[in-house]
Amino acid sequence: MGNLERIENIIKKFTKKNLKIAIAESCTGGYVSHMITNISGASNVFERGIVCYNNQAKIDLLKVTPKSININGAVSENVVRQLASNIKELSNVEIGIGVSGIAGPTGGTPEKPVGTVFIGFSTEEGTQVKKFVFKTDRINFKKMVLEKILDYLEQMIS
Amino acid sequence: MGNLERIENIIKKFTKKNLKIAIAESCTGGYVSHMITNISGASNVFERGIVCYNNQAKIDLLKVTPKSININGAVSENVVRQLASNIKELSNVEIGIGVSGIAGPTGGTPEKPVGTVFIGFSTEEGTQVKKFVFKTDRINFKKMVLEKILDYLEQMIS
Image (cartoon, each protein chain N blue to C red):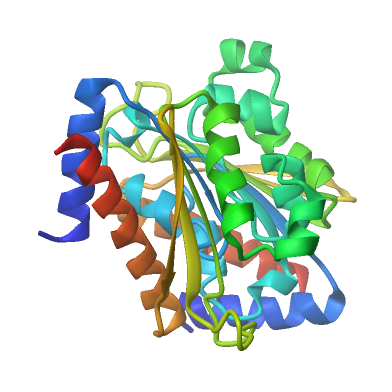
């Protein structure tokens, strides 16, 4: 199934269950929000997206603590946990999603190479953060993150 | 020139002039942010994006007055003026962009048919809002809005 079809299916099922999603995305730069909102009826499910591309936006809009960015870096389990959890609380939705990573081609380090990404999912049951490394180009990187998010959302309704 | 090339050119020139952009997009759902951040180096210019898909997000995140939404509707010159002006102020950037419209296929009215969109641009010189009607499908609609924004940004640096 193509991603648009997968999203259509997710929106239908989430609409039926009256579940809403909000997303705070950094490295994916709005791509996840864009893909979800390509589907007519997305507004029943998609509440808001924040493209918190720089650190000040993460602090201002998602209440990420400056200390956690200084200690762990913006691309870290700790910061993504806050992104997912705080967008859920601030938007008053059932599912908060947070993404931060290094899309490349620059910005990598030995510890966090280009392609490293943390994806966080927050529901009333708690927040989990997954780490991946997608060694690919900038545009395909965004697509691979989207697919991990779709996997998660599909699991929620399966 | 393709849109990616146009964006690359805009990012280069805005980086040189140290100009930063923030965008509050509703109907385009993150597409404009996504396209800008496809370019490596976008982080020098793109400060943040907000996908204020529902009215509460416009009120919470962009300080749009509930009264103006009640009186004019979310798709209006007045609301888009606030989106552009407020994202500029809140993000502390040189150029604030606001977008609200009806991507369709549903949601149109005789007064505001599907395809209606207001695009606002705010700089220290003031805020201007332009109205367009793009009678096309949902995905091409987003592309046409992007192209109007690129036209404006190119004019700024020409």
